[in-house]
Length: 335
Ligand SMILES: *Cc1c(COP(=O)(O)O)cnc(C)c1O
Image (cartoon, rainbow, N blue to C red):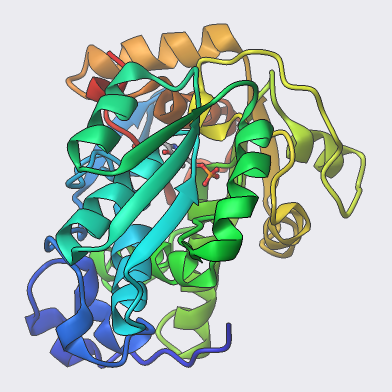
């Protein structure tokens, strides 16, 4: 989706602290259709990890408990502007929570397809927003296959296919640059399954560079679970497409994506940024989760996977590198 973003910096700094302060960079024409809960502009907190100071964006502090609200606020506003009355979406959980919440707020009816093994907390959340829940037997891929028939008949509010979702998640990068004094970090450590945060972040930094706000884009360090790592394997073998894998179970349910829809785009974004991929084991994820909880940050396992990757990255990084990572999802979702 071609879209030219503008950043009137002085105006932006006077606006309320939420993702819609980057109004001229969001593809909604008429303000009346914006569906928002004043989400975003999440705090960037300093943490000492492996004896290094790093900054972590607290994106678990969104209305539904994950960064997916960035994408949902943009996408459901877009649907509202186009007079959509009913949407369908498939998800491993959190995207379904976000699309349900913003649909509820917009008065749009909503049906969500999820794998039947999805965490009970996420299922309860989706139903509470009034969405119709469809539990699908089998893997995340089986869920993706079963949504297609419904998606032919209704607006497919897909976080993986619809580019407007990425125009929402790109605000993650805008906020980081603004919080650093309109500068870019040296590297960002992000989770990747379907890449809805990673690709949005990459677009966000590119747009700020094109607009002359920052001069460099950061290296993107992408983290996957060892038990489901089609992109790590492709990167290591220098392939342009994800390697088809049969996933083993992982506690990082949010990034357990066997066939990432935009796999080649993700590989390209990471390579172009001079970044790399890291995989983490189940033990490393569980350890990172309890380590963060002991500091007061209660994360869902998928979010802890990123921090496990961050720990591995720090060990190999330059001592003066400005590294940023993220807490993507709240621990209360999974218990
Ligand atoms: C969606 C999600 C991710 C990233 O998943 P992608 O498939 O790459 O979009 C990471 N953490 C949490 C908590 C999520 O909900």
